[in-house]
Image 1 (cartoon, helix red, strand yellow):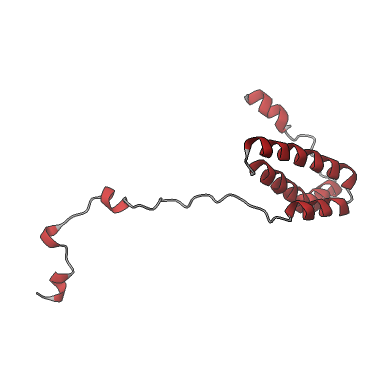
Image 2 (tube, helix red, strand yellow):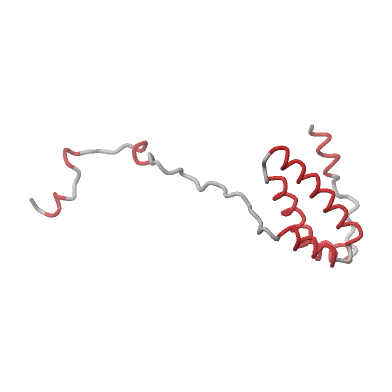
Length: 122
């Protein structure tokens, strides 16, 4: 038997498209849940306290955290806690851009109120 015939499928086997795609592995990567570090809430609170908006942000964070903590105790799920941390990390990260936008004097009076838009769609 020559080398060229040894690598060919026996009996003229043909695979269909469906067979090519079949696999025990999913065709997409599963979404991994965001899991903050154990000290993330304390670090986040320290960042909020150091910010110039601390008088409004700290009570709001503590309120949201308490609500999420109670929900997690009731449902045995950490998703709400992770979401609170992720939202507040985003607020802190984007605060300089928001400040720059406000300082630029850009007129946003023609902006769409998303809360109103949601009410209209619902």
